[in-house]
Length: 59
Image 1 (spheres, rainbow, N blue to C red):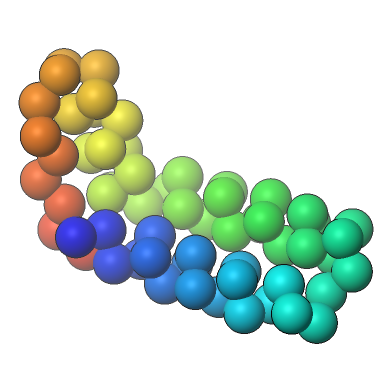
Image 2: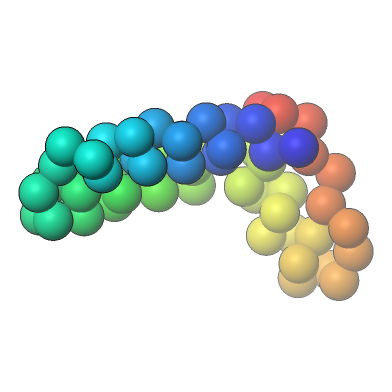
């Protein structure tokens, strides 16, 4: 399970209740960049390209 990605999603969703649209778009950009640096993100992309099931490690 990509636990960091799920945590980022929950954080961004939580922020959406108090952010303006511009603030929310900026937050989503920041969290997307954070997610793209995780090992699970890289594993997900590689698994997709190799047409296999991803082996997420929560990293």
